[in-house]
Length: 221
Image (cartoon, rainbow, N blue to C red; front, side, top):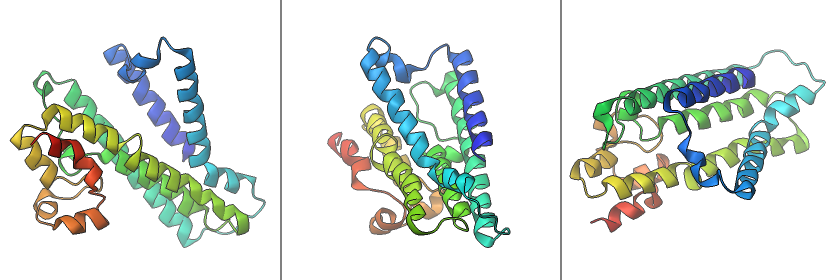
């Protein structure tokens, strides 16, 4: 599962660089070796933390038969991986379209979630953990840190928070964008006809529509 996911991501990033010629995420760090080192060390820690369940399973001498947790975890990983692949494909097509300039992405899965790629990433990471449940015991339950760390990171630090802020600053004064945010789930893909009619408290409690995602949108009013 780890090898398939890593290979898929590496190939996607490689072809994206071939198409665009650069990765703008690293522009601010190219001329500062210190910042670049900190960034990649953090990336290494991130990968190590997220793959802790797999590390524990591979280090174990136990060999139980396939259990329900295995199948559930594999299904979660498979669905998360497919969602991430489709989301990356949709976003890549959108950015390569001349008609996308000055617009936000709402094609394919992005019509049902503002960040479907992160939903896929979180789901498949929890899949690793669930599939490891037949093995882990005692202190090994600390591997729960992996999926929790990734979830909190994407929800509150490097993922949704940053991109929501960026989108609000670019399009916050556009009424159609405000409607889009109101009707489109931030993470879990849902039909707009359902999500748009849910009360805000329900969205905040169960669907991750936290106030911090609209902080800059409200400033543009």
